[in-house]
Structures are given as C-alpha cells and as structure tokens.
Image (cartoon, rainbow, N blue to C red; front, side, top):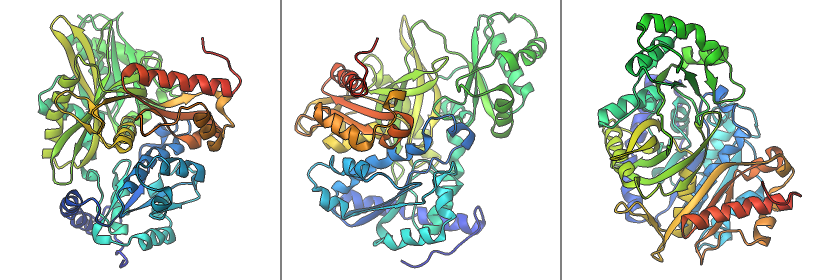
Length: 516
C-alpha cells in the first residue's frame, strides 16, 4: 500500500482528499452486499473523540473502547480481516472470549485474520490523536491493509480527528462526515426534529451565555406559568452527564420576561442541579460558553418512559430504522443512561419507529452516513402516548453494541412490521443490557475469573438455545469493579431474570449473600 500524502489537518487539501475517499464507499458497499465472502480489510479505531471534561465523569471510561469488540463478529465472514487498534493492550482472555462467541467459525481461523495493535498509552487523549501522534504505528496499520481498494475505517464517532486519520491511512470512513457533526449536538438535533415535523419540548437552542440561559428559562416559565422544572443541556454532553435541572415552581410566570430573567440569573448558580456528581456552576458555565447548549421544558408526568430508536443511513444513502429500546435511566433526576431493554414496549414501539424514520430521512437528505440514536420521553395520555424527541446521538451509543451482539450471535433480523427481532429459528429474541453493573467488591476480579464464574454457573451465552449472558467492558472489572452485561432471552422476563441471576452469582462469588 502506497504511503498516503500528509496534509495539514483541516486544510483544503485534506478536505478534498477525504471527499475523494468517501466517494469510494458506495462501490464498496455494493460489492460487499453482493458477496460478503470477498476479501476486505476493516480498520477499527474505537476512539471516544468527545469532550475530555465530560468523559472524565464516567468511571473507567478508557475501557469503553472495548464496547466495539463486538465488531470482532465480522470475522464470521471468511475473508474479512480486522485491524483493531486500542489505547492499551487488551487482555488476551478478553479477545479470546469474543472469538469463542463466533458462530460456525473456528477460533483459530478467526484469530489468523485479526491484528491487534495498541498505543501503550492510558492517557485521556482520544485514541485517534494518539495514533496520529505515532507515525510508526500509522505505518504498521497501513502495512496490515492487504486490500486497500476494499478497506474502510470504523470509529465510535466522527470528528476532525477521524477525518485526519482516514486521510493518513488512505481509507474511507464508514461514518458521518465531521462537517455534519453539528446535527448531533443538542442544538442541532432540535432543528432536525422541527424539520422532520415531530414533537419536541418547548425550548431554545444555540445559547452560550448566563444571560441567554436565564432568558430562555424565563420564556419557558412565561410559556407555561405552571412549569415546575426545566433542563439546561451542554451541546456535547455524553450519556446525560452534561445535563442540569432548574426548579422554577416558586417563580411567578405572569411576571415580565425581563424580571423573570433577572431573578433566574441570580438563582442559577445555587439552584441548578447537575446530573454529574462532580460538576459545579463555574465549570458548567465555562463549558456552556465554549460549546453552547439548549434550555427546554421538563416533560412532566406521573408515568414516563424513555424509549429510543437506533437508525442507520447506509453507504448509498438509504435511511433505515434498525431497532427500538426502552432506556433505563438514573442520576439525580433520571437523565443518565444506565442500560436498555429490547425492544421498546408493545404499546408504542411502532410509533417510535415511525417517528424515527422521519428523522432518518432528514438526516439522509443532509448527507449523514452511519449509525445514530434518537432519544424520546413518552408520557401516557387519554389518547395514547405523547412522544417528545429530545436528543440525537450521532455516533455509536449505549444501544449499539447490545443490538449488534444479538444480531451477530443469532444471525437473525429485525422486523419493521412488528418491531421484533427474530432468530433464524423463528423465535423472537429479547435482551436487557447495561454498561454500569458496578460494585466495589467486584474490584480485583480478573477477566479469567469472570469467564470461569459465568461458565461454572451456566450463564454464558449458548448458541443452540440462543440465550444467555454476554459480558463487555471486562477490562474495567479489576480496577473499577465495573462490567457490562447483555442478557438475551426468549421473552423480556427471561432476559431480566438472566441479568438478576448474573448479579446474584457475582455477589455470591465476592462474598455477599442476596440483595435487599
């Protein structure tokens, strides 16, 4: 493979080179769709290229690169070769764990087509930056690409870093053009929702200053004098950690916007309550002034659901809805993503699917390629559920790897007719998934300990029955006492039971009998 020329990041030459590379994705997609057995090379760089200050709020965040190990399932295609790059060397037990899950492929055959590379760098710098700063590693990656005309780059999310990396490697990026990244900000998604003609909470976007936050909150109170709360969001917050709630039930909604805004401005430093435990007003405002954000009305309701839809625009621009979920949320006001159940509830998942399809069409028309998720808040009414679209995650998210796990393990398919996933056996499949099974007592458990515990207690996913537990974030277990779980069953109750059984087994293995 010839050496790719170097262009300064963000230069017109780099942008032109990136555009030329992206023009190859359609032909590559057609070729692989016609015959998935043709030779191809996939370079996987699971860089979390997000605001470092927001990522620091997540325990064991650098292990989140491991969530993309589900892509090792691509090795079931007999001529596919993967080059997987990480910040630090992964435990071989973790890699073997995923290879052993491959249906119908000997682990030795898959391993011969897998190249694992790393930067030996555990710093908080995004992985893509680490690779770009290591010319010799870049060259090692390039030397491993055997079919450059049938190769592409896969990342967690797409920024200027991944654009530079794609150009340096001479590979098209199977993701959204970084020039469109604004569509995934809290401000950008509100504008997309309006264009798609779907309901969103009353509010304002493209805000930056203390005064603008105050005025936006005042307008919300004026719009609904009975409003009790509103939410203030950083444009680039992650997993709900960039959100904060402002209580306004004691404010007079009949006052002028000017008077209300002045009162709110005084109250904000003390009254704004953050989802992230370590956040404070000064640091939040500094980030808000830098990256911008939104304010919007809090969706009230005695019973609220938090469904989401996962969408994809393929390399030839076709929009698709590929799953729905109900999210499990936590944090001080229930805005932090903890996990999800698949599929979303019977009563509304087709409504979510239809709404998401309208958003996906807008995104495709704007040139988006790749996966993204759409989050909703849904409340029951006399006429049915009212769904409020609140966020687009223009990246692989917390619902991406569980769904890919199910799809790769069972070789099944999602049905748009009823919103269920069917294995080849014809059985519908369900799962419960979380990234945040975390206890201090789990610290010190090594990867081989976890595998041994799961196998001994019969939790490990079993291909013939198409049910069981798959772990991820295994590398975070020993240091942080944290691990991810996807529990797959034949019905929602079975999937939840397998998760509960997993917690019980881990508790017993670490000296605890039963949970209160």
